[in-house]
Amino acid sequence: MANHTTAPSRKRNAAPKKSPARRASKLTHPATRQIGTYTVPRGHVSIGVPAFWTLRQTNDDLEVEAPSGNTSVIVTAFQRTSDASSLDARDYLKHFLETAPRNGRVTVDPASKARAAARYRDPEGDRWEILFITNGKTLLLATCNTNGSKPSKEARIGVEVLRSMKLKKE
Image 1 (cartoon, rainbow, N blue to C red):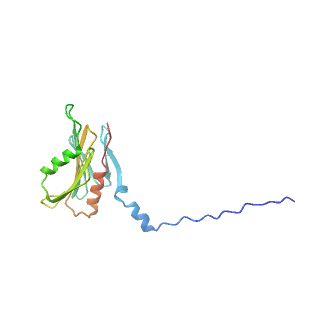
Image 2: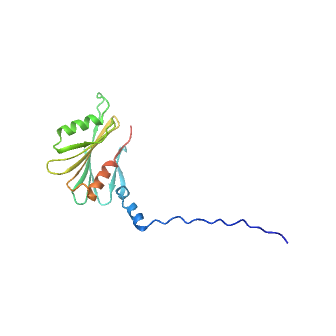
Image 3: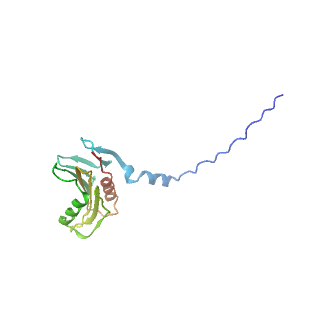
């Protein structure tokens, strides 16, 4: 008779199960609600567009608007002329804030030559988030305007849309 030995079977630990509430909260994060990304025809600018929000493009602007109409993100592009120096987002933000009607103090995020942002409220109580992005040749001015309260779901999604904007280096 032949002796047969078998290797001891390995005991696998089952992976811990996630609770349904934890799984559901992960799926409702604003970044995961974006149904798609819109890329302009030249292919160098893209922006996330949430489900049920309206996207409009004109010759000058790109607008993403909430279904209620209380929150919108508007993106405007500027091109450098051949004789001008490289575009600097900090300079444009500074000039914008000097001319914008605002009430109270402005919160400015740390800025660089390629990206500058600020938040403030205007005299009517609307909340604004401003973002300038540049690659040296193209400058994008993106504004998120909401007349809803800051912690509202729609306002948070509007800010996520603003922050989803990308500008490829040319």
